[in-house]
Structures are given as C-alpha cells and as structure tokens.
Image 1 (cartoon, helix red, strand yellow):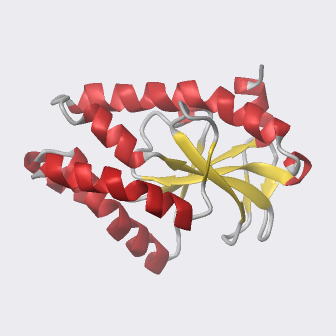
Image 2: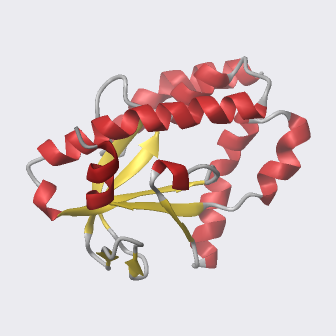
Length: 181
C-alpha cells in the first residue's frame, strides 16, 4: 500500500510543484525553494541578524517524495536520519550559490523552513525556533502527518505524533560562512 501511495504521489508531484511557485535549486539538490516575505514574529538570530515582518527570506522545502522513495527500503530510523542529514548537508552549498547568484540576493536576509526533523539541524547551522501560534502549529502538524505515516513503521507512529514542527532559520551570513565556495 505504501509503495502504491508513493507511486501516485510521485506522479502527482509535478502538478503540485507547478502550483506552488517552488523552484529547483538544481536537479540533484534536495531543496525546492521560493522567495517569501516573512509574516511571523520578530526574531534575532545568534549572529545578530534580525528577521522582521516582511523581510525577504528563501523558504526551503525538502523534496519529500524523492526522499521517501530513497528511504523506503531502509528499516533503521537512524540510517534514514543519516541519509536525510547527508542530503541536506550536500545541498546547502548549492543553495548558498543559488542565493548569491540570484538577482534579488541583496534583499534576502536568510533561509527559513519548517520541519519535524529538528534533531541535528543545529550541526548544519540552523537555529530552531518554536512555532508559537497554536493554530499554525496544529495546521503544520496536520500537514506533516501523511509524510510521517509514509516514512515511519506503524510501531513508530506514537513517536511521530509526539513530534512538533519548528521553524529552522539561518542567516545569509551564516550560510555563506559555512557553505560558501
């Protein structure tokens, strides 16, 4: 059943992609991105970068169906996590280059994502910020639920339900320091 759902999702993904204004960084990059105006509360990152309402950020989305296809035969949750970590780590230099080369790069203050997978993100340079708005947190939890069901064995569903989504932020300065070429 899981393989069938992934197959259908894989076929529908190009339509989703075309409706969301997402862009590929490169074909081999695990991120799909778009520029967005930040609408959350004001945040000061550890390097002093202030993210305020209406600042331009690059919103990062993991290419979930691609990841799920890659990890579908891996039984160990630890091996899945390591593979996803490596994909993200290997994709960040390409993201940095893409942003640096973008015609609006002077406007971009940082990158933002939302994830349930916040373990290990700090080692990649991200700062984890809790989502405060309970309605938005509930909405994001609900939207991640199908991905969680497809990526976890039934025995791990309780652990998955206990996870809460968080923002991931990284300033452009930090991205460049860590991943610039």
